[in-house]
Image (cartoon, rainbow, N blue to C red; front, side):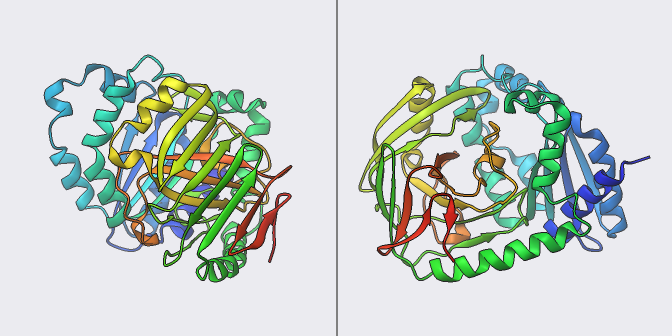
Amino acid sequence: MIHPLLERYAELLVGYCTSVGPGEQVMLQVDTAALPLARALTRAVLRAGAEPHLRLSYPEMASDQLELASDVLLASEPSALLEEMRRMDVFIRVAAPENDRALTDVGEERAARMARRMQPVQRRRLEGTRWATTLFPTAAAAQDAGMSTDAYERFVFDAMFLFDDDPAERWRELGRRQGRWVERLDRADAVHIEGPGTDLRLRVGGRRWVNSDGKRNMPSGEVFTSPLEDSAEGTITFTVPSNVQGAVVEHVRLRFERGKVVEATAERGQELLHARLDTDAGARYLGELGIGTNPHILRPTFKTLYDEKILGTIHLALGRSYVETGGTNDSAIHWDLVCDLRREGRVSVDGETILEGGRLRD
Protein backbone atom coordinates (compact mmCIF):
# COMPACT_ATOMS: atom_id res chain seq x y z
CA MET A 1 0.00 0.00 0.00
CA ILE A 2 1.24 3.50 -0.87
CA HIS A 3 1.32 6.02 1.96
CA PRO A 4 -1.43 8.67 1.50
CA LEU A 5 1.15 11.47 1.78
CA LEU A 6 3.12 9.99 -1.14
CA GLU A 7 -0.10 9.72 -3.14
CA ARG A 8 -0.68 13.43 -2.49
CA TYR A 9 2.97 14.18 -3.40
CA ALA A 10 2.63 12.33 -6.72
CA GLU A 11 -0.70 13.94 -7.57
CA LEU A 12 0.83 17.36 -6.93
CA LEU A 13 3.72 16.63 -9.34
CA VAL A 14 1.57 15.05 -12.05
CA GLY A 15 -1.47 17.29 -11.69
CA TYR A 16 -0.61 20.76 -10.43
CA CYS A 17 3.06 20.91 -11.47
CA THR A 18 2.98 19.42 -14.97
CA SER A 19 -0.73 19.04 -15.88
CA VAL A 20 -0.25 15.61 -17.45
CA GLY A 21 -3.01 14.81 -19.92
CA PRO A 22 -4.35 11.84 -21.90
CA GLY A 23 -2.04 10.40 -24.54
CA GLU A 24 1.07 12.23 -23.36
CA GLN A 25 4.54 10.71 -22.97
CA VAL A 26 5.98 11.25 -19.49
CA MET A 27 9.55 10.54 -18.44
CA LEU A 28 10.02 9.84 -14.73
CA GLN A 29 13.69 10.01 -13.76
CA VAL A 30 13.83 8.79 -10.17
CA ASP A 31 16.67 7.93 -7.80
CA THR A 32 16.31 4.47 -6.26
CA ALA A 33 15.98 5.85 -2.72
CA ALA A 34 12.61 7.29 -3.84
CA LEU A 35 11.15 4.01 -5.12
CA PRO A 36 7.92 4.39 -3.10
CA LEU A 37 7.31 7.72 -4.83
CA ALA A 38 8.21 6.15 -8.21
CA ARG A 39 5.29 3.79 -7.87
CA ALA A 40 2.93 6.56 -6.79
CA LEU A 41 4.06 8.68 -9.75
CA THR A 42 3.64 5.85 -12.23
CA ARG A 43 0.10 5.23 -11.00
CA ALA A 44 -0.72 8.96 -11.11
CA VAL A 45 0.49 9.23 -14.71
CA LEU A 46 -1.55 6.19 -15.72
CA ARG A 47 -4.64 7.60 -14.02
CA ALA A 48 -4.15 10.76 -16.07
CA GLY A 49 -4.36 8.68 -19.25
CA ALA A 50 -0.68 9.17 -20.14
CA GLU A 51 2.20 6.75 -20.69
CA PRO A 52 4.96 6.69 -18.04
CA HIS A 53 8.59 5.97 -18.90
CA LEU A 54 10.42 5.21 -15.66
CA ARG A 55 14.21 5.67 -15.53
CA LEU A 56 15.90 4.69 -12.26
CA SER A 57 19.31 5.98 -11.13
CA TYR A 58 21.32 4.10 -8.51
CA PRO A 59 23.43 6.15 -6.04
CA GLU A 60 26.80 5.68 -7.77
CA MET A 61 25.51 6.12 -11.32
CA ALA A 62 26.81 9.65 -11.89
CA SER A 63 30.23 8.87 -10.41
CA ASP A 64 30.51 5.68 -12.50
CA GLN A 65 29.70 7.62 -15.66
CA LEU A 66 32.24 10.33 -14.93
CA GLU A 67 34.95 7.90 -13.85
CA LEU A 68 34.63 5.38 -16.68
CA ALA A 69 33.29 7.32 -19.68
CA SER A 70 35.86 7.20 -22.48
CA ASP A 71 37.17 10.29 -24.21
CA VAL A 72 35.30 9.12 -27.31
CA LEU A 73 32.04 9.04 -25.35
CA LEU A 74 32.64 12.43 -23.73
CA ALA A 75 33.27 13.96 -27.16
CA SER A 76 30.26 12.31 -28.81
CA GLU A 77 26.76 13.63 -29.42
CA PRO A 78 24.11 12.23 -27.02
CA SER A 79 21.92 11.35 -30.00
CA ALA A 80 19.90 8.54 -28.41
CA LEU A 81 19.18 10.53 -25.25
CA LEU A 82 18.28 13.59 -27.29
CA GLU A 83 15.89 11.64 -29.50
CA GLU A 84 14.24 10.12 -26.44
CA MET A 85 13.76 13.56 -24.89
CA ARG A 86 12.29 14.90 -28.13
CA ARG A 87 9.54 12.31 -27.81
CA MET A 88 8.60 13.39 -24.28
CA ASP A 89 5.83 15.84 -23.43
CA VAL A 90 6.60 15.92 -19.70
CA PHE A 91 9.74 15.33 -17.62
CA ILE A 92 9.64 14.76 -13.84
CA ARG A 93 12.91 14.44 -11.93
CA VAL A 94 12.99 13.03 -8.40
CA ALA A 95 16.41 13.30 -6.79
CA ALA A 96 16.96 11.36 -3.58
CA PRO A 97 20.61 11.75 -2.58
CA GLU A 98 22.11 9.01 -0.44
CA ASN A 99 25.68 10.36 -0.49
CA ASP A 100 26.29 13.95 -1.50
CA ARG A 101 30.03 13.26 -1.50
CA ALA A 102 29.79 10.59 -4.21
CA LEU A 103 31.43 12.84 -6.81
CA THR A 104 34.14 14.25 -4.56
CA ASP A 105 36.91 12.19 -6.19
CA VAL A 106 35.81 12.93 -9.77
CA GLY A 107 37.75 15.69 -11.48
CA GLU A 108 35.87 18.91 -12.26
CA GLU A 109 37.33 18.87 -15.79
CA ARG A 110 35.56 15.60 -16.60
CA ALA A 111 32.37 16.85 -14.98
CA ALA A 112 32.52 19.96 -17.16
CA ARG A 113 33.03 17.85 -20.29
CA MET A 114 30.01 15.70 -19.41
CA ALA A 115 27.93 18.81 -18.75
CA ARG A 116 28.86 20.21 -22.16
CA ARG A 117 28.00 16.88 -23.81
CA MET A 118 24.57 16.81 -22.16
CA GLN A 119 23.80 20.44 -22.91
CA PRO A 120 21.55 19.71 -25.96
CA VAL A 121 19.50 17.23 -23.91
CA GLN A 122 19.24 19.73 -21.07
CA ARG A 123 18.17 22.48 -23.44
CA ARG A 124 15.53 20.27 -25.03
CA ARG A 125 14.20 19.31 -21.61
CA LEU A 126 13.98 22.93 -20.45
CA GLU A 127 12.51 24.36 -23.63
CA GLY A 128 10.59 21.45 -25.15
CA THR A 129 8.81 19.75 -22.24
CA ARG A 130 6.71 20.65 -19.24
CA TRP A 131 9.04 19.73 -16.41
CA ALA A 132 9.26 19.56 -12.65
CA THR A 133 12.13 18.76 -10.28
CA THR A 134 11.86 17.69 -6.67
CA LEU A 135 14.02 16.37 -3.84
CA PHE A 136 12.78 13.33 -1.95
CA PRO A 137 13.83 13.33 1.74
CA THR A 138 16.57 10.87 2.70
CA ALA A 139 18.62 10.20 5.82
CA ALA A 140 21.73 11.56 4.07
CA ALA A 141 19.99 14.83 3.23
CA ALA A 142 18.72 15.09 6.81
CA GLN A 143 22.26 14.64 8.11
CA ASP A 144 23.56 17.39 5.81
CA ALA A 145 20.80 19.67 7.11
CA GLY A 146 21.68 18.90 10.73
CA MET A 147 18.25 17.40 11.39
CA SER A 148 16.82 14.06 12.38
CA THR A 149 15.35 12.03 9.54
CA ASP A 150 11.80 12.48 10.85
CA ALA A 151 12.24 16.23 11.35
CA TYR A 152 13.73 16.64 7.90
CA GLU A 153 10.89 14.68 6.30
CA ARG A 154 8.37 16.95 8.04
CA PHE A 155 10.35 20.00 6.87
CA VAL A 156 10.34 18.79 3.25
CA PHE A 157 6.65 17.92 3.16
CA ASP A 158 5.73 21.16 4.93
CA ALA A 159 7.73 23.17 2.38
CA MET A 160 5.52 21.61 -0.32
CA PHE A 161 2.28 22.31 1.66
CA LEU A 162 1.55 18.56 1.68
CA PHE A 163 0.06 18.71 5.19
CA ASP A 164 -2.65 21.07 3.92
CA ASP A 165 -5.98 19.66 2.81
CA ASP A 166 -5.48 21.14 -0.67
CA PRO A 167 -1.75 21.65 -1.43
CA ALA A 168 -2.44 22.80 -4.99
CA GLU A 169 -4.68 25.61 -3.73
CA ARG A 170 -1.96 26.76 -1.34
CA TRP A 171 0.42 26.98 -4.29
CA ARG A 172 -2.16 28.92 -6.27
CA GLU A 173 -2.51 31.35 -3.34
CA LEU A 174 1.26 31.91 -3.23
CA GLY A 175 1.24 32.24 -7.00
CA ARG A 176 -1.35 35.02 -6.86
CA ARG A 177 0.73 36.95 -4.32
CA GLN A 178 3.92 36.47 -6.34
CA GLY A 179 2.02 37.57 -9.43
CA ARG A 180 1.59 41.01 -7.90
CA TRP A 181 5.35 41.24 -7.33
CA VAL A 182 6.06 40.09 -10.89
CA GLU A 183 3.71 42.72 -12.28
CA ARG A 184 5.63 45.36 -10.36
CA LEU A 185 9.10 44.02 -11.19
CA ASP A 186 8.35 43.74 -14.91
CA ARG A 187 8.46 47.55 -14.98
CA ALA A 188 11.83 47.67 -13.19
CA ASP A 189 15.29 48.41 -14.57
CA ALA A 190 18.01 49.22 -12.03
CA VAL A 191 18.58 46.73 -9.19
CA HIS A 192 20.88 47.48 -6.24
CA ILE A 193 21.82 44.70 -3.79
CA GLU A 194 23.44 45.77 -0.52
CA GLY A 195 24.65 43.76 2.45
CA PRO A 196 27.77 42.63 4.33
CA GLY A 197 30.50 42.36 1.69
CA THR A 198 27.93 43.18 -0.98
CA ASP A 199 27.37 46.23 -3.15
CA LEU A 200 26.18 45.08 -6.56
CA ARG A 201 24.25 46.88 -9.26
CA LEU A 202 22.67 45.31 -12.30
CA ARG A 203 19.90 45.99 -14.77
CA VAL A 204 16.81 44.02 -15.75
CA GLY A 205 14.99 46.48 -18.02
CA GLY A 206 13.13 44.70 -20.81
CA ARG A 207 13.50 41.28 -19.20
CA ARG A 208 10.55 39.22 -18.01
CA TRP A 209 10.10 38.15 -14.41
CA VAL A 210 8.78 34.64 -13.79
CA ASN A 211 6.32 33.64 -11.07
CA SER A 212 7.80 30.37 -9.78
CA ASP A 213 4.81 28.95 -7.94
CA GLY A 214 5.62 25.25 -7.85
CA LYS A 215 5.02 24.43 -11.49
CA ARG A 216 8.67 23.51 -12.08
CA ASN A 217 10.49 23.23 -8.78
CA MET A 218 8.72 21.46 -5.93
CA PRO A 219 8.99 23.02 -3.47
CA SER A 220 9.23 26.45 -5.02
CA GLY A 221 8.51 29.98 -3.92
CA GLU A 222 10.51 32.59 -5.82
CA VAL A 223 10.31 35.22 -8.52
CA PHE A 224 13.20 35.42 -10.95
CA THR A 225 14.54 36.95 -14.13
CA SER A 226 17.78 37.18 -16.13
CA PRO A 227 19.88 40.33 -15.71
CA LEU A 228 21.17 42.11 -18.79
CA GLU A 229 24.32 40.17 -19.55
CA ASP A 230 26.76 43.12 -19.46
CA SER A 231 25.14 45.03 -16.58
CA ALA A 232 26.52 43.58 -13.32
CA GLU A 233 28.95 45.96 -11.59
CA GLY A 234 30.36 45.59 -8.10
CA THR A 235 30.78 42.88 -5.50
CA ILE A 236 28.57 40.28 -3.86
CA THR A 237 29.27 37.83 -1.04
CA PHE A 238 27.22 34.64 -0.84
CA THR A 239 26.73 33.68 2.80
CA VAL A 240 24.93 30.36 2.30
CA PRO A 241 27.24 27.38 1.53
CA SER A 242 26.84 25.68 -1.85
CA ASN A 243 26.98 21.96 -2.53
CA VAL A 244 28.63 21.29 -5.89
CA GLN A 245 28.66 17.61 -6.78
CA GLY A 246 29.32 16.71 -3.16
CA ALA A 247 32.01 19.32 -2.54
CA VAL A 248 31.43 22.38 -0.36
CA VAL A 249 32.00 25.88 -1.70
CA GLU A 250 31.61 28.41 1.08
CA HIS A 251 31.61 32.19 1.50
CA VAL A 252 32.00 32.96 -2.19
CA ARG A 253 32.87 36.53 -3.10
CA LEU A 254 32.56 37.67 -6.73
CA ARG A 255 33.48 40.98 -8.33
CA PHE A 256 31.85 41.92 -11.63
CA GLU A 257 32.84 44.35 -14.35
CA ARG A 258 30.57 44.85 -17.36
CA GLY A 259 28.65 41.75 -16.36
CA LYS A 260 31.67 39.44 -16.13
CA VAL A 261 33.27 37.87 -13.06
CA VAL A 262 36.76 39.35 -12.93
CA GLU A 263 37.67 38.30 -9.39
CA ALA A 264 36.48 35.29 -7.40
CA THR A 265 37.42 33.98 -3.97
CA ALA A 266 36.02 31.39 -1.57
CA GLU A 267 36.94 30.59 2.00
CA ARG A 268 36.37 26.94 1.11
CA GLY A 269 36.37 25.37 -2.35
CA GLN A 270 38.47 28.01 -4.12
CA GLU A 271 39.82 25.57 -6.72
CA LEU A 272 36.37 24.25 -7.51
CA LEU A 273 35.01 27.79 -7.81
CA HIS A 274 37.59 28.67 -10.45
CA ALA A 275 37.06 25.39 -12.28
CA ARG A 276 33.34 26.14 -12.54
CA LEU A 277 34.02 29.65 -13.79
CA ASP A 278 36.31 28.22 -16.48
CA THR A 279 33.69 25.76 -17.78
CA ASP A 280 33.02 27.95 -20.81
CA ALA A 281 32.71 31.60 -21.82
CA GLY A 282 29.19 31.97 -20.42
CA ALA A 283 30.06 30.65 -16.96
CA ARG A 284 31.40 34.02 -15.82
CA TYR A 285 28.15 35.85 -16.62
CA LEU A 286 24.85 35.86 -14.76
CA GLY A 287 21.91 33.83 -15.98
CA GLU A 288 19.47 34.54 -13.15
CA LEU A 289 18.47 36.87 -10.34
CA GLY A 290 15.91 35.36 -7.95
CA ILE A 291 14.12 36.39 -4.75
CA GLY A 292 13.01 33.68 -2.28
CA THR A 293 9.42 33.77 -1.03
CA ASN A 294 8.55 30.38 0.54
CA PRO A 295 7.10 31.05 4.04
CA HIS A 296 7.90 27.52 5.27
CA ILE A 297 11.60 27.50 4.32
CA LEU A 298 13.38 29.50 6.98
CA ARG A 299 16.82 27.87 7.33
CA PRO A 300 19.58 26.65 5.02
CA THR A 301 19.66 22.88 4.56
CA PHE A 302 22.61 22.50 2.18
CA LYS A 303 20.22 21.84 -0.72
CA THR A 304 19.97 24.67 -3.24
CA LEU A 305 16.46 23.66 -4.30
CA TYR A 306 15.32 24.65 -0.79
CA ASP A 307 17.90 27.26 0.18
CA GLU A 308 17.24 29.55 -2.80
CA LYS A 309 13.56 29.68 -1.79
CA ILE A 310 14.21 30.97 1.77
CA LEU A 311 11.97 33.96 2.38
CA GLY A 312 14.13 37.09 2.52
CA THR A 313 17.10 35.81 0.49
CA ILE A 314 18.24 36.48 -3.05
CA HIS A 315 20.19 34.24 -5.36
CA LEU A 316 22.23 34.74 -8.49
CA ALA A 317 23.02 32.00 -10.97
CA LEU A 318 26.24 31.88 -12.91
CA GLY A 319 25.87 30.53 -16.44
CA ARG A 320 22.85 29.57 -18.48
CA SER A 321 19.86 31.90 -18.47
CA TYR A 322 16.24 30.97 -19.05
CA VAL A 323 14.78 31.67 -22.50
CA GLU A 324 11.42 32.62 -20.97
CA THR A 325 12.99 35.59 -19.18
CA GLY A 326 14.56 36.98 -22.34
CA GLY A 327 18.07 36.06 -21.21
CA THR A 328 20.67 35.23 -23.84
CA ASN A 329 23.58 33.83 -21.84
CA ASP A 330 24.52 30.27 -22.79
CA SER A 331 26.59 27.90 -20.69
CA ALA A 332 26.85 24.27 -19.66
CA ILE A 333 26.36 25.33 -16.03
CA HIS A 334 23.58 27.04 -14.12
CA TRP A 335 24.95 27.49 -10.60
CA ASP A 336 22.70 29.16 -8.04
CA LEU A 337 24.44 30.96 -5.19
CA VAL A 338 22.42 32.27 -2.25
CA CYS A 339 22.89 35.55 -0.37
CA ASP A 340 21.07 35.82 2.97
CA LEU A 341 19.93 39.40 3.57
CA ARG A 342 17.52 38.76 6.45
CA ARG A 343 19.64 40.20 9.26
CA GLU A 344 21.34 42.94 7.31
CA GLY A 345 20.93 44.13 3.75
CA ARG A 346 18.40 45.28 1.24
CA VAL A 347 17.39 45.11 -2.40
CA SER A 348 16.30 48.29 -4.14
CA VAL A 349 14.63 48.61 -7.52
CA ASP A 350 14.84 51.94 -9.32
CA GLY A 351 15.74 53.57 -6.00
CA GLU A 352 12.87 52.02 -3.98
CA THR A 353 13.58 49.36 -1.35
CA ILE A 354 11.57 46.19 -2.02
CA LEU A 355 13.34 43.72 0.30
CA GLU A 356 14.72 44.50 3.74
CA GLY A 357 14.96 42.61 7.01
CA GLY A 358 13.69 39.43 5.39
CA ARG A 359 10.44 41.06 4.29
CA LEU A 360 9.18 41.79 0.82
CA ARG A 361 7.23 45.01 0.62
CA ASP A 362 3.91 44.71 -1.17
